[in-house]
Figure 1 (cartoon, helix red, strand yellow):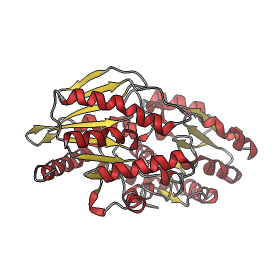
Figure 2 (cartoon, rainbow, N blue to C red):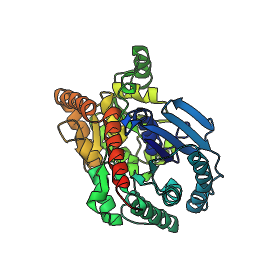
Figure 3 (tube, rainbow, N blue to C red):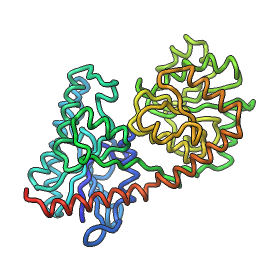
Figure 4 (cartoon, rainbow, N blue to C red):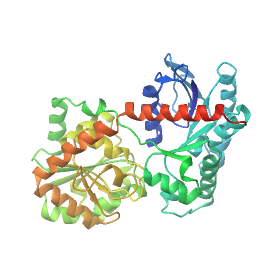
Length: 401
């Protein structure tokens, strides 16, 4: 069986969780036992960050990158949709050499490609929805661009043979927002690179400890995009109360453009206790997870929360908002602590719980690591995905188009 997987992002072009998800799933997925042999995956993606036009990664995985026109920041939606034309043209060239049993697209950014090819080839379309525009804005659509994205998300869900959601929360959101029937949605969670979570030399740990906690300070870590829905401002607002009780505490903020929160830190007089690290490598992130007292993810909206999985896999204690997929991954007082969303005092309570009872914290941390190993390895996720593919291809073979 051969699948055409279409994603706006793929290394070296990775902007957020969607690109990371595809990049880590596809190499494990390709080559698994499939109908009449092994599963072959052709990835079709953009070339905004360069990379080879055609990259053969294995006998079962080839990546095809396409030059797409620059995006117009004043007309983001329409420029994205127009850029899909170059992907459609490349896909038609590939179809002259390969027969695809299924098309799998990720989010609205490549929806036009998937929908056009579905009808031309009469091949079933699978759509993975990683997040929704309405969800990002707490149920509202603040602009015409947001409304356009919302309509495209509905359309690619409607056109799909089946829709993949990463959590029960996202499944319910798709039903509520787009009216999808429950049996059209399958929940397949995100996974984690367990090997990557274990890489950190002791020399590197010692250097980071000397840099950020030379006097044995407590360390808290935030990792993520610096956008409103990730809730970093809520965590910063918790810092004055935390420092009143634990003055030797530092907050490390890893994420591009984190300095935009400098004014808030100065306003609250906590700027000396916060380090805005900017972008950091995966290796440094994983090392920090092994070093800090807690990784905190105070999201206001989170369809899944793969950053929490990464922290848990590396052995960090986690504190997360009880929202969306985070509330499914982290079970309060069992493998981490959950807090009320948009509530700085709730974060203060959780950190005090963590610092005051290290024995319980260590028990939760070890349980979290075990949960990740048992439930969220990419091998398990890939096996669920290929079983799902088989079902759809078999259903298509018994259906008149």
